[in-house]
Image: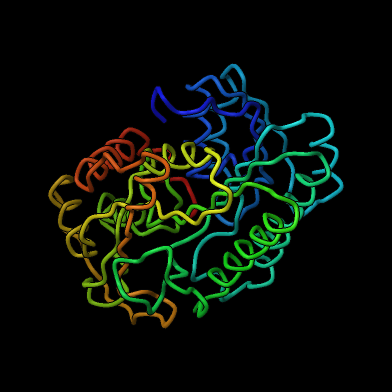
Length: 331
């Protein structure tokens, strides 16, 4: 947001606040003077100690309140809305990860779709007009790059992507019927300090750092539009601007970079060589992603600022600074 931007709503309800992206977004909001009502169910999809580590950095901050709550629990959500009266909702709570969605698809639909529906119903009931809904670049599978928001995303190839599509469609329905203002932000391969342990860059750093076998699906030529978490947090906050209903890509917007390049950079920075084990490419994996970010620039005045190299350097530094703690976490 810049000096000419409209004032940010406050307080905001930020779901999934102990998560990777949401916790960083909470810090940015607090820095801007916005009160944050943080909600998270602290599930054990990955080691909950990392979630609590992120929360620790927020609990001491003025203007932050935390409620351990599941967005699938409509009654608890209604009580929270009634008591705390948020001015806007940033729904970053989600079951994430393409691979695991094939093993447990039901929880993806109940959290990502039904949970979003619960929030929309509470917004309608309590007169909250603004939602920012976190979505995913996984919806663009099989479509021509760079991925534009105008592309039809009607053929998701994972339960994760399908559940996010369901959330987007339901949000549009509530915009159409009840006039809710919704910014759907589609994230592109977010990385950075305190990332999720199931994400490639986190794992690559840990495996190379500790001399363990690096498991790489495919030959490493698959590429991603890597986006640093601070850029994503800024874009998510900017998406609080009134837009009506818009789907907006938040990505690096540069040429996609290959997994081989990422591994080589980490090897160089750590002074170690990866012991790579190649695994078959799963059918739900996308060979490449690349965001068209013109719309984010035009509507939100947003563009990414952190290069892949700078972001990797910051991430590696964080891993080294928290080496002992991370070594004890379940991956």
